[in-house]
Amino acid sequence: MEGTTEKQRNRRATTHEEEEEEEKPKVVVIMGPTGSGKSKLAIDLASHFPVEVINADSMQVYDGLDVLTNKVPLHEQNGVPHHLLGTVSPNVEFTAKDFRDSAIPLIDDILSRNCVPVIVGGTNYYIQALVSPFLLDDTVEDMDERFLGDHPGAGQQQTELASEVDNSSYSYEDLKVIDPIAANRIHPNNHRKINQYLSMYAHHGVRPSKILQGKAAKNWGRVDNFRYNCCFLCMDASLPVLDRFVDQRVDSMIDAGLLDEVYEIYTRNADYTRGVRQAIGVREFESFLNLYITEASDEGNHLIDGSMSFKLVDLADKMLKENMRLILNSLTDTQPKAVLKEAIEKVKLNTRRLVRRQKRRINRLDMLFGWNMHSLDATESILCQSDDTWYAEVVGPAVELVKSFLNQDPTLVPDSVTPNSTEMNMIQRDLWTQYTCKACGDKILRGAHEWEQHKQGRGHRKRISRLKKSREYLSVEQHSS
Image 1 (cartoon, rainbow, N blue to C red):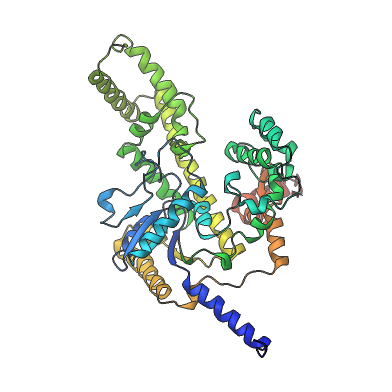
Image 2 (cartoon, helix red, strand yellow):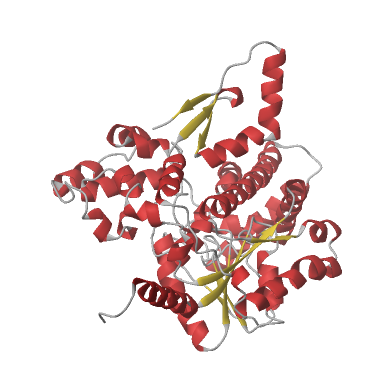
């Protein structure tokens, strides 16, 4: 229309954008570190809303290891439908793309029944893949082809490159030669990510860093690109309280049959980079099971042979499982007992480390990308183990937040205002900057946010203080790529 003014056109564009925002399906997302009460909160919300839960824990999606992965038992689900909980074969790799592609139709189905989809889990990259239209830093199949096609050389000599890389050992040193920027971004022992980056290079002839710093990276995490209208509930608790709770939970898992589960899936020299075997609590028992099963086999060779019936094999398995518990509870200090106790302590230590990683990643999503997390502190309820405290300090506030969200309270809709392009570019560069802390034994920090958190940590400050007092202070070096 010729008579339409610029102001009218802008008003119509704004109205159209608002309508699009309103049309986005609403989902509730419960995030937080392990042990903070995410699953319990989701089930309790079902007393107030027609809730269906979609599990977003990368280990709980697998069938098996129910105790070790801390799946909510059926009798504790209180009739609340749970999806993607123990439904995936334990031997396959269920990627962020797989999760996204499985969760989207589930959400559509839940919404069609006028129910509220509640995404629950501590695997943040699953949730990122679901809510954002961009997949960042996953397998080459996860990359949108329109981004790959923008780069010169994509498709050139792909067959030769694929053959060259596919026949290699997929080592960290190979990645450093091909793409030092991408190599700086991951740990040298992260073989899964090394394989993904080298596959990306092999099949497209483009360095992973160039792809991941391109259009997908600029848009990843931006709230105005969200696939859904999200209400983020972030469970939290103080680290000392979570540490004690994690240790107690591991002990409870041992009593509940964790050792039996690990024994059932044990195979010598197993691949711990795929499927459910990646779970904390599997690899840690490898040394003990190697020792224990070898000794048990030597002692039982006169009973076990190739003609042994299934019934006797089952009986032998039960005896071996019972003997593991006897070893743990024995008053005598033996080598198997020492190795077993060390394995249990490793499970506790690695779980505490996981808690810290999860908290850092959530802080990054909140601070760098403006995900507008609504924090719910479970510290007191964990400490006193009181249902009254849990409902007063966690469930009650969560119910009010979800009510406001479902009633379209604008304060609960993720802020559509995003950093300007310069700020976004600075953030992306920061995520790719590597810092080395000499004071903490050449500890590698990736990204300015992680570096700042490390400098504020109690351990780092104590080391700096000791070094200064002994006049051996070494300046902290920063390496950027």
